[in-house]
Structures are given as structure tokens and as C-alpha cells.
Amino acid sequence: MALIRSAFQDELDGVSQSLVDLTNMVSESIVKSSKALLSADLKLAEEVIATDVKIDDYQHELDARIIDIIARQQPVASDLRALITALRMSADLERMGDLAHHIAKVARLRHPNSAIPADLVLAFTEMGHVAEKLATKVATVITTRDTDMALQVEKDDDEMDELHKKVIIGITNGGAGITIESAIDLTLLGRYYERFADHAVAVARRVYFLVKGEFPQ
Figure 1 (cartoon, rainbow, N blue to C red):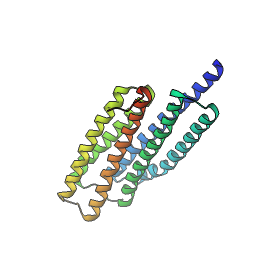
Figure 2: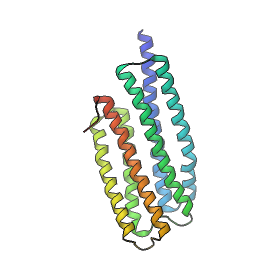
Figure 3: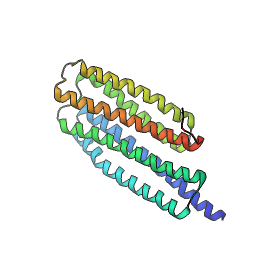
Figure 4: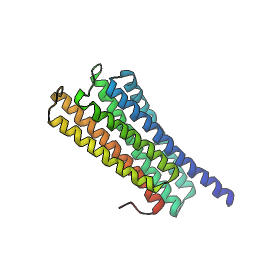
């Protein structure tokens, strides 16, 4: 029985590590897509777009593995909660990868020009930094199950929300270089970053739930 339990625990640990690996892939994608966006780097944008397929495949394989574990082991209580939570977290992480992919596609669409006018370069630079910080913290939260850091992710999301508001104000003020086409791009890009942060918060909240048995208030 002890050997069976040990093998099951190894499978649970493997799921947790796969979530961390998926988070690291997403983190790398948002960093690259932000750089591609700000520097009109077509090669980097294409890398992110290609990597999204790998992220999707990795997530699908992880979900299949989790379902197989549930079917074979028929876990209960905290073990079942961990596996169901992992399924939901993988979906959030895959969506974060999609959002990095969308950012890269805008960079590719506007190449060789930059999609970001000079007046909003700083705001989008900061949004990229916050997105990277969120992804990095999420990986740590999954690894350590640090509930205090999970709560900190929500506070970091407030920073992203403020930057998103700045972008919207910049668009509505119609600064230099903002055409109708540009305004559409910028509105979408701001939304992509804002949603990326929201999904990072969702992952952190799920870890908090896993540890505490309830979601943070």
C-alpha cells in the first residue's frame, strides 16, 4: 500500500511540475511577444506564434494525463481537489499563451512598422513587465503553494488594470500617430494584457483554494 501511495504521489508531483513548466513556457512567450511588439521584430513574433502550438499540445497532454490519473486512482478529498484544480489551472495557462500569441500576431500584422505610437511606448513597456512579473510569481506560487504570494498576484493585477486605463485614456485623447486602425490595435492589445493578468490571478486563486479549501475574499 505504501508503494502504491508513493507512486501516486509521484504522479501528483509530476502534474505540479508540468504546471510549472507550462507557466514558464507562457512566461517566455509574453516576454518575447512584448519585445516583438515594441521593436517590430518579425522573427520574434513568428517564434511566439509557433510556440503557441507547443503550448496547446503540452496542455492537452497534461489534461489527458490528469484525467487518466483520476480514472485509474479514483482519488478522494484533497487529492481529487488537487487534480481538478490542476485541470482548471492548465486551461488558464493555455489561455495566457493564446493572449501572448495574439500580441505577437498584431506585431506581425503591422511589421515593418511598430503597432505602438511613441506616446504609449512607456505604458506598453510597463504592461509587458507586469505581465512577466505575474507569470514568474504564478510559477513560484504553484511550486511553493505560498498563499501570501498568491494574494500578492491579485495586487499586481491592480497595477495592470491601472496601466490598461492609461492606454484607454491615451487612445481616447487621440495622441500623435493614433489613427482609427491604430486605435483598434491598441484597444485589443490593452485588452490582451489585461486578460493575461486576469488569468494569472485565476491560477493564483486556485492555488490558494487548493491550500486553504476556500477562495480568498
